[in-house]
Amino acid sequence: MARRVRLGEPVEQIVQEARGGEYDLVVVGSHGRTGLGNLLLGSVNRGVAERSAAPVLVIKAWPA
Image (cartoon, rainbow, N blue to C red; front, side, top):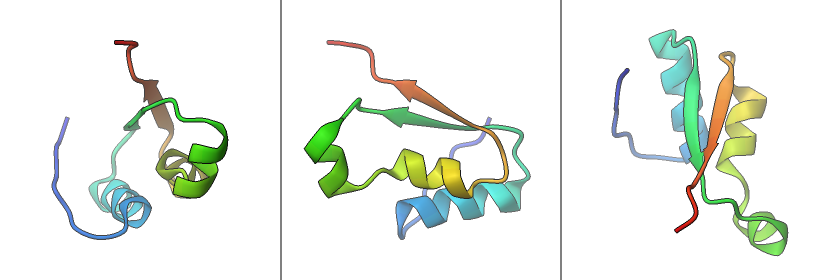
């Protein structure tokens, strides 16, 4: 497992790190936003899943 801090556009940075690091799996968290909020804000998870060469596992936030 590795943790990195990078600056820039989130999808691009995650995908570049995954490619450069030759990871077997990319794990990203989700707030569970749907509908209009997701449409307006965009979806980092979707962008990563569409562009990543490695499988992407999305973990939904635990209800408070």
